Length: 115
Length: 113
Image: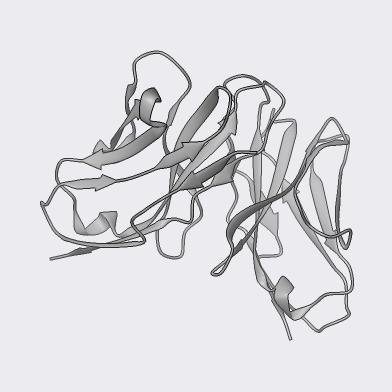
């Protein structure tokens, strides 16, 4: 079975600071990787996804993530955060079998951006 | 395209009762997955339906069940509610395949008293 670890549970940053949220996964086969964001009072939204190819993927709102296969990692980055990025961020994996249809989530990282 | 819709958005029930939640997927999406979100356990997979068949199942007791209709709409049912069932129940829809991406609805917040 797969598992996902997000090491940062709560991160506080000032506006314009750079962000990197860690995500490591455990699975014996090929996976698809995702970052979702949950803004206060809103539903879970897809930030970005990785299936194959270029390990550096870009998502919405200036976010990007890098897949490092040797480290089983898929860290999320943003060069300069804004107050509106305050939210909870979830890393998730899905086995690339074509029929898995099951996301395994990390415990989430709560990001608080101060003015 | 309209997003995933879930009804009702909020529910209050008492222990021992049963509840049915509904999910309408994005048009053209034939897979519907259900997740439970709690502060203690995070986001956990309940089950997934495709073409009216349950294809994947998480580690939840048999009190949690679901079904999918021919129009891909799905319902989940929880019988004999327990206090610990209080949670946000999320539905996600997708087109299954090697590049499957799940899109989530707003959820149904269930409070069991």
